Length: 357
Image (tube, rainbow, N blue to C red; front, top):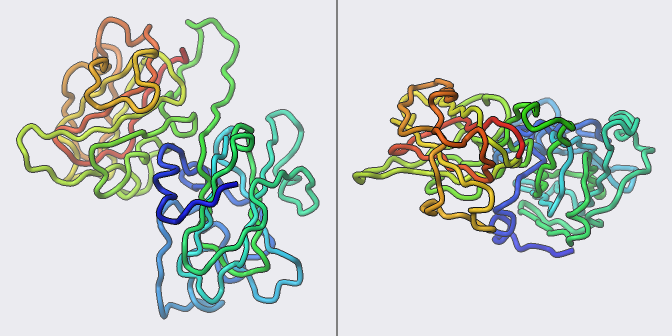
């Protein structure tokens, strides 16, 4: 178990996904107590905020999970079901932002794997008597109003998990829980390649990962891989305004499911005065990409969508059939894709649909 300095948490886990997010459909199944502030707040994808002087009927308003004082048990607990089919967890962050005289003094993380068809129900896992938990992080000290990160050894991160339980000793408040790792997609049905179903190869739910972007001034590129169409402009990807001639912005995505491409969707929902003038979509055929991070100017990028495609405000742009480049998008297996914004702006979602390779 390696504790990560606060300043290193983001770079250490840069190429992972925060699996403990309501945007990835993770949800709280049960908790011991959340009298002052809801345990659901742990899964809020944005940073915690402070509202000094704001009071509600239970007391001061807090953006996090806060339990009653004087817990008669050793700890308070919350059980969370991950929104993905299963996940590998590489590390955890417990953020006590704005909890100062009321933070939880120690955190412990447990996890379990309830394989589909195992007969183990969410209700059983949420019950305090459930005995199938594995400890990933032993009870570890936390301080007031700061981020605390731990990286797990490889023998922990290789195992699949579907549920986690966070213990807070003895009571108090945590602002956010972040679980850094990778989604494990559901198994593919046993079918002939031509009969394989069309799936969303790029989705974060299937392990899609935003590796790099030219600019993330307003919001991160990882948002474009989230399920659904989101709620507002804040859960898309938006770059700064460019001024130079010939400027473009780009994001490089590793597909969770390498495969052939049948359809591409670029959604500008909620982007009305700041959508890109046009977009380009390229891909890397499996085996041609750098094992680490392929560069945006890698010579092996090939067109998936033909040419620059004009965009409109607040619109789901669908490219298929004649919009796709001839010569193999439906037969070649792609491992990475690149979305280019001409010249800049914002998009809500970027979806690559096709068949697993």
